[in-house]
Amino acid sequence: KHNDCYKKKSVDELHTGSSNGSMRGDMARICAITGKGSQVGGGYSNRVRATKFNPTGKRRRQVNLQKKTLFIPELGKKITVNVSAKGLKTMKKRGAYQTLKKAGLVS
Image (cartoon, rainbow, N blue to C red; front, side, top):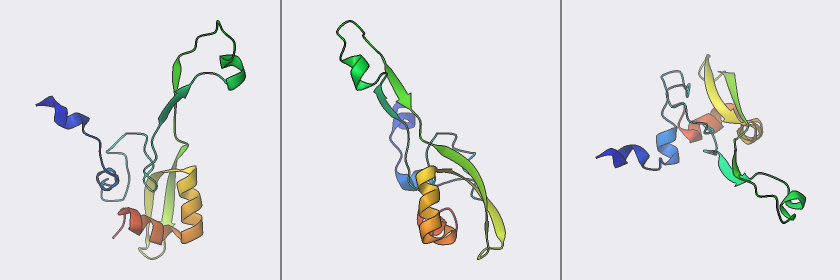
């Protein structure tokens, strides 16, 4: 019964937000453009881990998310998205409207 909420979401399912394109409804730390999420990695650098009696735990490495409000001239309105730094570079390269359209945030 309760396993439905633990299923891994596809990128298309993550791109469902409110009517203005905001990702506030789904509060997971996931980029709206690239679909990047957090990763779990080691706690220290390689030099510290090389010492014998220094056990470390894991730490979660969060994605560099920025909340940005963009004006889209093709739509004539503003859209708020949670986007990673890499997603911002992608929008700068390809254009905001085309990138958001490919991600399914605008029609």
